Amino acid sequence: MFIVVQHDITDPELFWQKASGALTHPPTGLRLHSTLFVERKTCCQSMWEAESIDAIREFLEPELGGASNTTYCEVDPDTAIG
Image 1: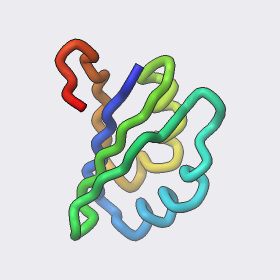
Image 2: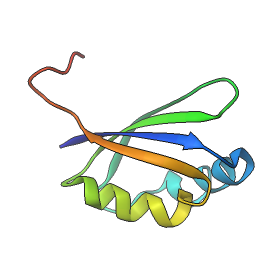
Image 3: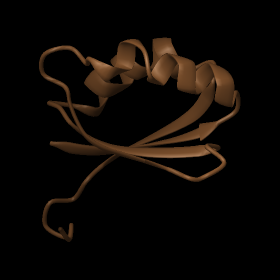
């Protein structure tokens, strides 16, 4: 399944330090397809592929939970465009 993750960044310095470190090599079973962020780096959206939202959440929250408020949404393949 595809999962969209939105991080509303509360601590940009910590967020980008963590995101550019360990998160660049996700564990087997998780695949990061894209990452988009606003110029001021206060919001980041990414598209993941995994077996469940929980798999993504269990990977991201320990690293980024203290630097952002995160929303996880499953992509509806029947209405997605692109």
